[in-house]
Image 1 (tube, rainbow, N blue to C red):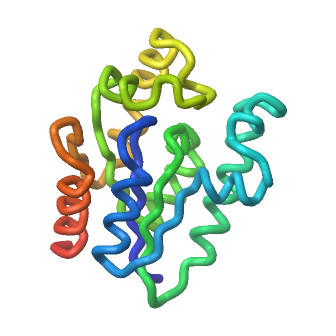
Image 2: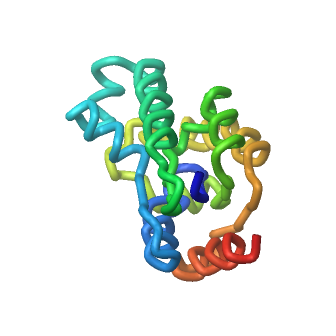
Length: 170
């Protein structure tokens, strides 16, 4: 199987932006897991949450992750932007540990909040809940990471460069 780099982190960490840059730099395919869920369900994530709840969303997210990884060919690399909560699922952590290098794009809840508040994300409606959610997810991000990059003082291009260097050196 070709290499897979999975970018993890909380909302606003830059998984999609950095992922696209890394994919271009490496000449690999980029897949945004949230976009794949929306495509499969023909519905935005906030509507899935409202209609079916988070548990149903997580089930679909895991199925889509399994499909993306199963479709990975032997020749081309893949950069995968995970959803912010993907790693809350033990099954997802196990799949990614087996099939990818996980890069945690770390940032403080305060910086993440500044980046995402008012964007309509279903889990970014109040600072208190947002901050608490960040804290609950931190352990899964750290535990799953093969590489941690503190993104707070870096531009997306600088973060992408660090990811590319780590991938090409390993």
